[in-house]
Length: 76
Image 1 (cartoon, rainbow, N blue to C red):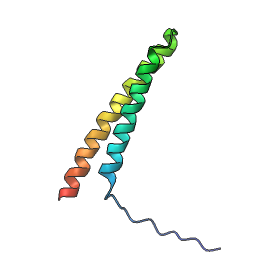
Image 2 (cartoon, helix red, strand yellow):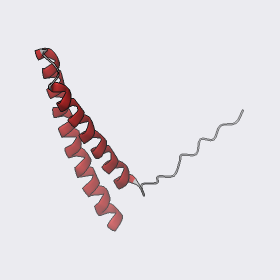
Image 3 (cartoon, rainbow, N blue to C red):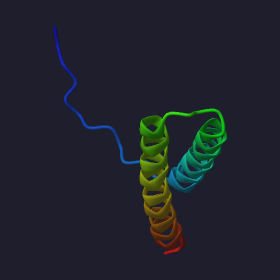
Image 4 (tube, rainbow, N blue to C red):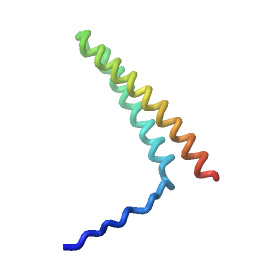
């Protein structure tokens, strides 16, 4: 059995689009979680959802920063 140990080429041509899709999906997940808050009476669940959405906000900020970097790099 032979193995191909050649690394895959580094193709970043669609990174901005992928990152934008990740931002969009994360925002949708946040909105769904916010909606679910209306239906929960458990303070524990409420705190978990709010903590998770805070982490999502941080992720979105990171994604947007990375989008700027990728867009800048692709223009050079």
